[in-house]
Image (cartoon, rainbow, N blue to C red; front, top):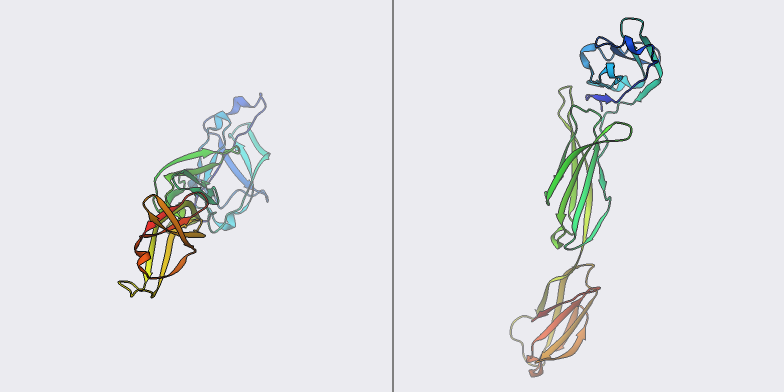
Length: 283
C-alpha cells in the first residue's frame, strides 16, 4: 500500500568457500530490473531486519510509493571478496493506492439459534512492524487476535469472533474492519468486509389481533389476525378452541373470520407452525 512499509522475507545460500567472508558489516542491497540501485530506498528508509551472518536477508522498505513498483533482485556486498547479486532471489513489488479488503470465513452465515458461531477475519500484514488493527462491529462476543506466518514467510493478521447465535442476530450485518497505518502523515486507511447473519429460529412473539376491538354485538363479523416472528417465516397458522383437554379446530390461515356468538365465548388459540416446532397464543 502506498505510504506504508513492506517487509520482504528473504534467505540465501552461499558456497562453502564464501561463508567465511560473512560478517556483521555486510550490506543487503536491492536492485531493480534495470540494474540501478534502488534510488527510492535510501539507507535511512531501509531496515535490514534479517541477520546476514545467518544468511537471512529479510528487509523492510519504508514509505513505499506507486512508482516503486518493479522487480527487485537481492545483492550482498560484504566489502571484501564476497560481492554477489542473486539473480534467483527476486521479488515483484506492486504498490497499490489502497490495501486489500479483509477476508471473512465463512463468507456466508446461516446457523440455528443457540449455535456457537466462530467467524474469522484475516488481513495481509505486508508491513511487519505495523500490522493492521482488526475491529469487529457490532461487538457480539469475545475475539482473539494473532499473527500467522504463511508458507512464503509473509504475515497475516487474524481475528476470530465467537458468540452464541440468537434470534436477535437474524439479519445482523457483521463487519470486520482492517485499519492500516500509513507512514507519510496521511490518516490511517480502513477497509471493511461484511457478512449478513441468517439465524434459524422457531416462532416467537406470536400474537393475535382482533378487529373490531372491544365488545361486539352478537352475530357480527370479527376478524382475527395471527402473526409471529420466525426464520424461516411461518407459512401455516391453525386456529382452534380448547375445552378442558379437548381441542377443536376452527380454521386455518393467517386471518380467521368468525361470527360473534355465545358459542365463541371459549378462548380461541392461534398456532404458528414452522418446519419443526410451533408456538401457541391464547387470545
